[in-house]
Image (cartoon, rainbow, N blue to C red; front, side, top):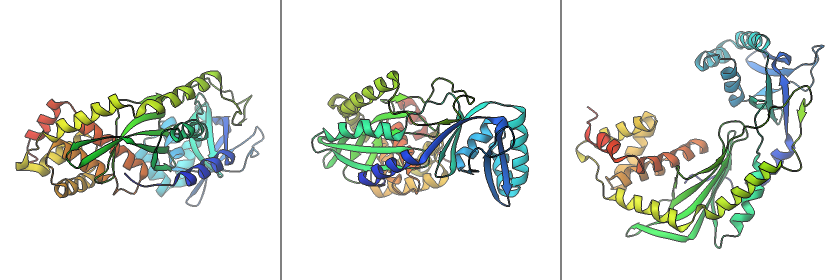
Length: 358
C-alpha cells in the first residue's frame, strides 16, 4: 500500500483547507476566461464588468470540467490550452455567454479547483473525517496504515490487526476499511472494506461492498447565494447519512465479509495461469481492466518476482505495483483493480488465460 501523510498531517491539512476554501454560485454570463501569455485566469464579474472577487488561477480538474460543460472535446481543449491560450479563452467565453447557466465554483488558496453544477451537494472532508476518526479510534489496536489528501480525493485507510487469516501458510491478511471522498465532483463518499496483505504491505479494496453518497442536492440560485459559506450544522438528511457512515465504518471490517474475501483468495490461489504465455495473459488482463502498457510491464515484473503464477498471484502483482506509481489516486485505483481481477467471472478469466498474445 502506498504511504502518504501521517494522520496528524492529514488532520492539519483538512483543518487548514476548511478555513481557506470558498464556494461561489454564479451565472456563467458573469464569468470570463482571460489569458496572460501562457497563463489563464477566471474572472467573476458584476453587471458593470468589475471583479466581484480576485481573478482566480484554474486547476487542472476545473479546466476539464469547464471543457466538459461547454462540450469542447478534451483533446482540443488541452491543445488550445498549451499552444494558444488566447484561442481557448475566446472559445470558452463565447460559449459561456451563449449558454448561460448556474454553476458552482469551488475555490481553494486563490485557485478554482472545481466547476460544478449548482445542484452539487457539498459533503466536505472535514465533516467526513470528523465523523469517522472517532469511530476508528474505538477499534482496539486499529492502525491507520495510509492516508492522503490529493487534488481530487481524501483517503483514510485503516487496518484491524485483530481480524486476520492465512490465505496460504505464511501469507497473512488483515481486515480493514477505506474511507474516501471527493470535494471536486470526481466521486461520491465511499466506505469500502480493505484487505491488507502483510507479506508485502499490499492493500486490496473490496469494490462491490461500498456504502456511498453522491454529491447531488437542491439547486442553488446565484442571485441569492453568490458566496456560499460552510454551514455550522448539516441538514437533517446529511446528518443521518453521517450516522450511517459511522455505522458502516464500525461494520466494514466485520468477520463474515472478511472470511468471504479470504475464501475468494484461497480459491484464486488454486487457479493457475497459462504458463506457456504469461506475458500474453498479463497483456490481455491489462486491456480488460484499463491498465496502460507501462503498468502491465510493471505488473508482469512483480508477478515473476512473486513466483506465484495463479489468479491470486496476478491480483497481488497489481496491488504490489500500486506502490510503484507516483500518483496516490492511481495507486488507490490499482488497489480496486486488484480486487476486480480476483473477483472477475471465471468465464472471463478462462478467455484471458487461454488466448495467446500473439
